[in-house]
Length: 321
Image (cartoon, rainbow, N blue to C red):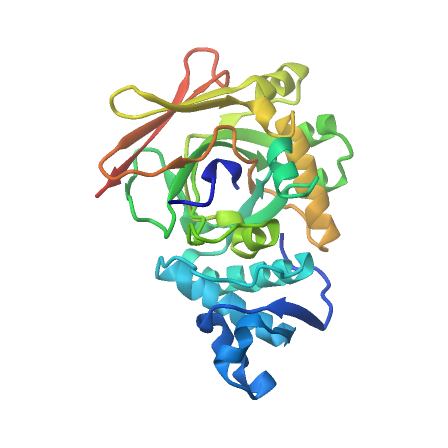
């Protein structure tokens, strides 16, 4: 039976200073094999031992994660006690290993933007991932139902940065001044880890917060008004299958109570890492709906109510077998 409750992972951090060495427990021979020379002992001895890993060793972990990602394999084992700083370094290297295949950085995504989920992960902050060009697809795309090792979907919301002045914003009202569009976004994350593993925040960060694919709608122009601020929080999202059966629903308040609060957090988190937002960056703000497992042969629609006064905005994707 599955041990992971995938509804706990809305999808949903890049490089920061690291200690030179760290204590990590290694279980899987796929991850242990590179470190055999460190202890000059039998591989089996690593099962219950803690070993000291250098940053170079963590780079090797990131390379292995990239190999799993590119071959769509489940991760059957992984160090479960890496530190937050180690997870950030692994993610940064992991993303760099994907750029040749997935394209350049086009934006960022926030995960753990729901307070109840944060409590389950023993954190009071979201987590940050990176979006690459080839991850983003137009509405109506046909996607393999096996697009990842653990393919999922969720109703999300995206905004686009209008000006680098957003990096000086201090409030959500100021943030809104420097966004030029809101974009309906059906995210297709990949949790990657085997159901037998118990996920923690650091493991989620290491795999780039599950970023894999996403279905984008057409950009809708934003205005820096109180009406738009309220509208963003009140967006209603409903996901249905081709038979009209409702699979999930939610509203914009699921995003830290206010989607613009997530934008402000992304800006601040990037600044803490010595980075900044730039014009054109796309920001995925997190899960509005619960995660839903992907099933082959299904055509899924996501309806966004409140973005367009004339009629709901709809996205669709078909998962081929």
